[in-house]
Length: 414
Image 1 (cartoon, rainbow, N blue to C red):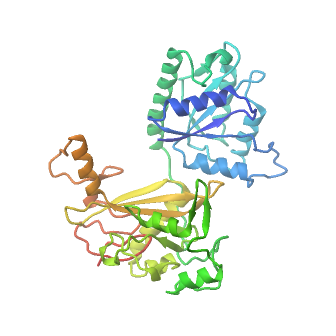
Image 2 (cartoon, rainbow, N blue to C red):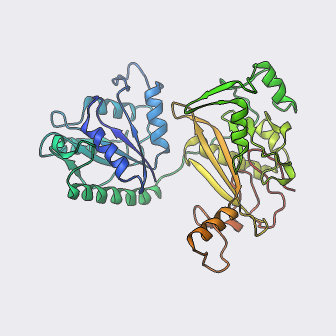
Image 3 (tube, rainbow, N blue to C red):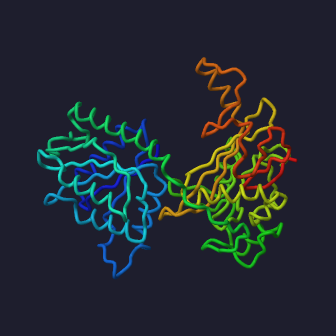
């Protein structure tokens, strides 16, 4: 489960930040908790709309994609901090990421009562019409005497306190599952599959459907190659090393940017006919509509649905098993959203691989076996693979369909 946790203080030293960091470490097996800071959020002033500033865009995008939100509030003068109040004002002015979002409240303070009064005020704010959050009832975690509550590693000392916190989190995770049934995904707007909205990295002046786009575009922008070094966020590789690294991956990888332009696929020195998602070099740079030019309109809608679903943050990934393959192949596709530094949608990467050898290895290594008779493998949502359409490529619901088409590369298997 993907949760985000808002630090309700803009102070450098915060016991509420320590509380959330402890939860992040202590319960990492249960769920993924990502901390969000409000230090850079401007003071709310409706006369000077700052809804588009980086700090607020970042919070909006992160909260929108999360399944649930945890807010750790201090207590200042019997209420929440001005920084947290200002942030919630912005997030209920023009942006409304907390609407219908499940929220859990925790808090730490210097005194015996924890943050009881601040939490009461925060609940009232979260219930306001402009916020409309679903706040977890009961389960009030009030960490008093915070100075003495943590050890030098930042861990809560009292085992009973940790156990109660875990109980509250478990209840919140159940609450998230219940509330998710009440939530409606954002409506998906029609996708521009013709690359008609150039972005900062769009290379102009060359027809995206030109079969020589890769060479022409590389020449136009003086793209580096060979032994030129590329500094990455966590590494330094030459272009050749980076290319070798990606080509050595035991997966077929593709990438299309947020302008719906197909820009990359790795190739483990295979011919297209031997790949699960068949690709050719001439497709690099293509408009997504061209990539899928042979698809009937109904299947093209499936392509738009997956891109729109990821763009909207309705889901962070879409996974499917393509039906109609031989028994030695479980053709698995994972479509994952990518994000810019401010958390906005940056495109889609696809991982395609045969899951069968991995499954066989796991069963052999652990001495386990599959049970359940002849039931078809299931995909998320409980749909049998043989009856679930490939949402991105528009693969038919018929298990024997021979026109399964990869959503990103668009290379047909027929």
